Length: 323
Image 1 (tube, rainbow, N blue to C red):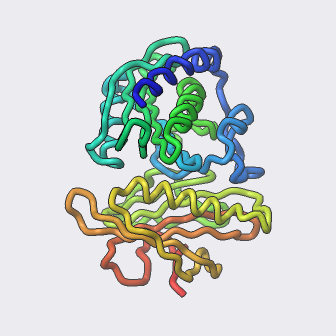
Image 2 (image 1 turned 90 degrees about the vertical axis):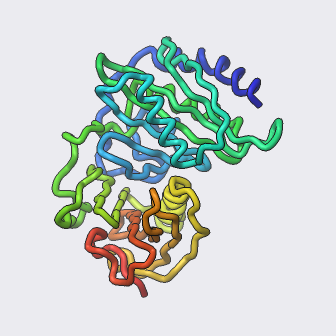
Image 3 (image 1 turned 135 degrees about the vertical axis):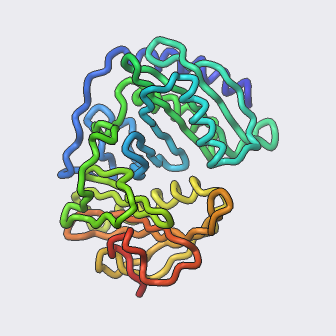
């Protein structure tokens, strides 16, 4: 497996260099016309087809592409080596410390950049997870961390990681938004209403299409798209892939249960799971749901203590209700 991975890195080196010869500035995609097939700028749509954006933070984005997760995190002020180390910590928080790791370099934009390759294998060709962390400097003093985790068909997934890195390294966010705390839209809002920010909470992410409100014991995140095509299962796929990403990011998460609920006042089916608390804290429960709200596709997630009783916390802005 290690030989195959090394060969794959060499094979994709030429592809990465060729793809990154130029780096035109991408403009943010307007909300109108965005669909789950890709809320992406024109030159990213075919590459990111089938990927679902999951709200992360003001300076980062995560995309779920089938069994693969890829992210970019703008980290000005860090060195490339420091960005790789912080990416390694992110991977370990997600997958645990029992990984085989190899440090090296990846050729991005015609230049070598520090990288970390990781995998978990039970035999010569039985790897259950693998991926890369790397970092680039697209402009002076501006370091961008890139990471990717592949499951299922790990070997093919690693090749896909490198293809996505080729775009993200120099062109950045494929949705076109500037990733910076200064670019947050405040107050946070859904297209049809302004959201409430409880005292002591923070807006971790907020654009015209997605956002996250983080409080001490609860978190609310959302993403939207238009138009919804009835009968195509768009909303359900958006919900399920986003839920998979949230579960994978929480080690020890339980299996999911599907429950009747209301999302933004509409009767639907929600997905619920629990996960161990971080750093010895209380376990959490996570509710996710998706609906067609007057032609808008809405995905929402609300996390709260596992022991909490209804109603949902004010953090989640009344979007969820049991039924």
